[in-house]
Image: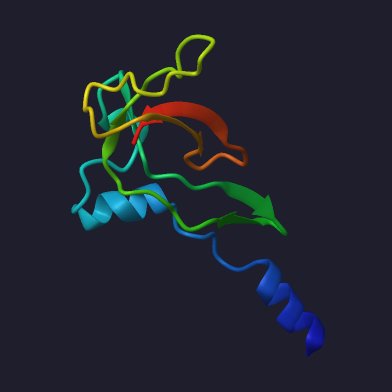
Length: 108
């Protein structure tokens, strides 16, 4: 009996893709980076890994809106180069369904 329970736990269904869940809800400005202009990224971040034969995903974080990409410029690290003067350029770890995140700099 214990072996059956372990087998069922290890071969459960894959976690739903948070991007697909977002898109199905239809309430967000964006769910994937491709939903934004090429000068922006979608702040909807999650990672997924294969674990014991199934896909396991973290919960998505972010506000599901497009944020303009920027660069923390110059030797001084000037972070105030965003078009919207109420925002500043900040580093952020971002991933959408991969098992890793990559740094992006965007206006928040």
